[in-house]
Image: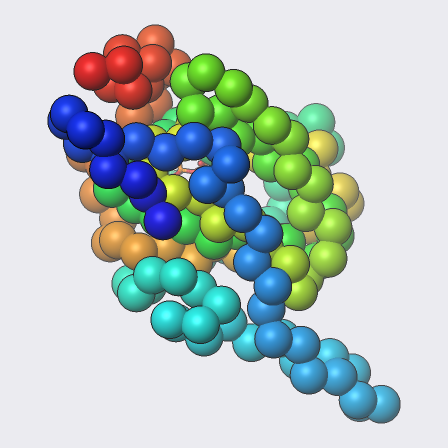
Length: 146
Ligand code: TYD
């Protein structure tokens, strides 16, 4: 979903950060939620990880990725995700497990206001690679402008 710029690499805007509606199969025994590659998840995924036991008041993220695409799903509790394309930012509350958020490359993201016992699942397109991270906001802005 990242959009190619006329010059240089891919650029993304916060309106490319879209809700992802996962398949929900519920009956009297409870709820089962499914994320299919190529259907609800718009990229091939190589890795899954989750955040949990985040202390009250703590925040996570505060970085962008050059290539990695991601879907965040708050599978328990609630969290606020702020996405920022270097020009605009937007806060997206994740409050239920069947609606995730797609984040394309070159979007700065922060996760905050984790509720007690929140669990945030990440489904991502790339193997872990520290070189794919931009961890300084000014570097991010410079790369976006480039
Ligand atoms: P990071 O992605 O910065 O977490 P967050 O954005 O939630 O704050 O990762 C935290 C640390 O864990 C960092 O040292 C990198 C390491 N890490 C791995 O070794 N493998 C992984 O798959 C991930 C996601 C992180």
